[in-house]
Amino acid sequence: MRLALALSVAFAPLLSACDNAHHGDALPAAADQGGKADGAVGVEILGMLGPQAPVDATLPNKTARLGHVVWATAGSTIDLEVTRTGSAAKLDTVLHVWGPRDGQGRYAELIASDDDAGYGALSKLGGLTIEQDGFYLVEVTAGGKAPADLTNKAFRLALHCDGNCIASGPVVPAGLELRWVERSAEYRALALSSYAAATARIEQLAADGALPQHWAVVTDLDETVLSNLQYQRERAELGTEYSSSTWTAWVARREATLVPGAKAFLDRVHALGGTIAAVTNRKTIECADTEANLQALAVPFDLLLCRTGTSDKNPRFDAVQDGSADPQVPAAEVVLYVGDNIQDFPQLSQDLRHEGDEAFADFGGRFVLLPNPMYGSWTSN
Ligand SMILES: [Mg+2]
Image (cartoon, rainbow, N blue to C red):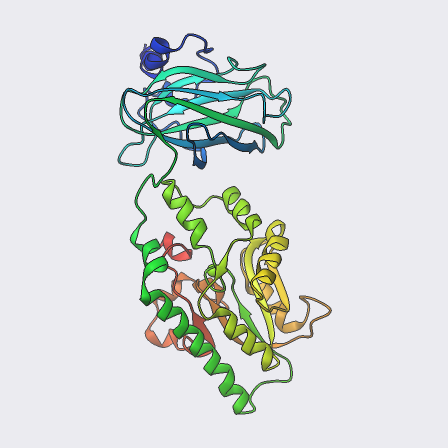
């Protein structure tokens, strides 16, 4: 009984307006729960979708659920189709439409679905009437006839809108943390202050003759040298957050910019004869794009140590010091660490916040911190 009710609610707009869809295929869990749960949880939101601007995306595997967001006013009638042109041969898709987005950021209600009404086993929804102004999430996933080993199949999703549909965000306004990094004089001042302190530290060591023969600076990359503000903004504007696959796609774009002061500091390290070891938790598969991004920004570095088995940076800090990181780069004593995350510093974690002020004594000396109010290990405190 509960299931039957849920189905009638979920498909009411579809049944009234659309007669060519194959209803009832691959129903997501939300329909079984009366629409109370958010069945769209787990959909990877990739971007916005607008009329006359089809989007191209790739299903990485059979269980991937990929979403695009469209804004439509009440009374608009929309057609959605996974088109033959732009989609991989013999691809089997399923379309789901969720929404409207509620105040908690959920796309809780499934309002339409189709499996095979499009070309071949592709999907198509025609004449879906939108009953409420809002943002809607259009999900594409693999259909039942797709092979279990489906990998990296392209599809193209097209929207026709008779009414008023908008293809641009933001789904929610940018938060204070993003606006602060992007627009405040204070963020720039803090970043430049941090790098001024870092520069003063190594210049003083050099002036005192206190630098060892082989010395190194260990630096984090993200939000320390590379600014990923654009990625943060894109995710925020879609009303969503970081995800591993969208992050990898962002890294591949090589569009990170410079954190203020970072390049001048690293250039100074090289000028004074130091080794620069970039120790990042970007993954091994992201390392080549990271290297290219750094080179395009003319950021000097001698070692680029991406994440391999563990996100714990301590083994890589040790490898810089004992010379095992790279046979071409001699062992070097690390005189300075730079990062935006407490875990960018040896043996430190969020536990440090429970310690007395004396436990922070290295900050401003051999530890230099950059501000990052957007993300980090602190968010789980
Ligand atoms: Mg970082």
